[in-house]
Image (cartoon, rainbow, N blue to C red; front, side, top):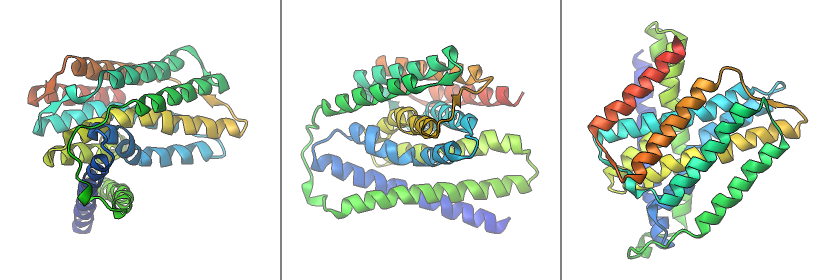
Length: 310
């Protein structure tokens, strides 16, 4: 037990330190190229924190019998946790200003989530035509990134060097390893305490897969670079659908196999839609999340988790 607790603390320390270094490196790169911090969070940081989900998807899609349930559950569960859990926990400690999210980014998140969700209502199998729809959304996404306005801050080029890119990549690796160590040690501890595997899976595992995003938001606000953290939450949900879910589909289809929609997925899709609409609505209203909103989000997430158990 003591060893597991020590390992847990080491993993948590590595995770937080790596997130801190990632925020610093990303901010330096943003200033070097006069890019808005939220754009960095929406793209580079979001891709880095979505790496664990991508690894899970590739492994699941590559199995002899593709684990499409795992691919779907991985994306939906992560996106719900990013909104309700990450924003909920973060806003308990910091005031999360959702007005930092651009109108266009909100609309794009709504469109991509809507397309993703509608497929689960209308079809039993995702075919090549549906995949083409995701590719079309990627093209739109990349095009709108090109039109992002430049950051008007004074550049701090003196802090930039080619090592900044290396530090960013190392921080991604540190977040992945730190999160995994923390997650594995947590599972060992709670298993030894006699908790049921189901409860561990929907609580500790859910938190574990959201640790990179949570750490990024918290550290970004600690370092007064909240735009990066907010951009990461929105960007991660976009990345999870376009650059995590789609690769899983393409891997299965490239093997001439069918990508079937899992049964009994309606509840999870409904929660995803509802939580996304709430987040976008608050953003459009230029709402700042505080402790009260935090408790609502966290309670909503707990109710959702218990409804899954029941």
